[in-house]
Image (tube, rainbow, N blue to C red; front, side, top):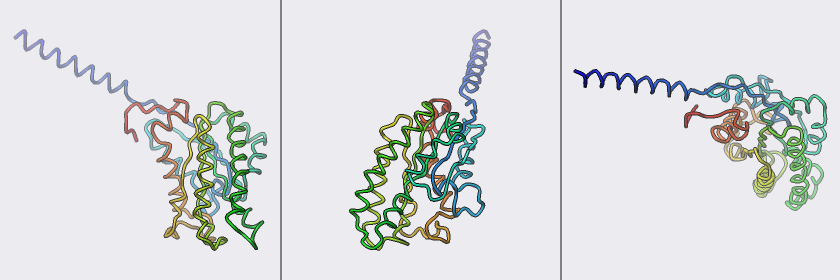
Length: 258
């Protein structure tokens, strides 16, 4: 009888411990503040809802995590922006104020730098023109990330790569994919030089056979294209990467949390 009572007591005790452990492991949802800045991909040109391109999709995905309560976004996207123009916009007071309090800064930039090369060398365009400009592009990207880091030493930075719609409009050469790959390698290399910084590759989303992802201008994404971009960003930063980006503000207590 005593053994039976002792066994029941032990079972109840272990069950209680298990319950407490589960409660201790429950995530505490946090709010995160995200600043999105860059070109038309951030503004959302081609988005039929005019709600910011990839931003609302990514916001929904982030808030689906048990670890996040509210993901608030401030959108500073501007159609046509190049790296040199974005670098200047980082000095605007309201932009600086939002970056200073951001948990994450997301950047889409570079497509218009490529377009500039095309427009300035239309009559005799060669791959060498892109190779020459790529060096300056990398230097300006480095300056952009440095300036953001100077404004907020704790924020994570997410740099989204460029994709290739250029062959559809401008470049009648098989080199266009190689140009985009090379410029993205430059972006990835620059991002790797900074702590709490992630590079997101989207070039294969818009590869051959992806016509259904483009807006009617055949240059910008449509709604489905933006949803695909958001999904790629989310897949890249979810989990341990998000913990690092947010400086451990977001912590995944249970592996595989979603």
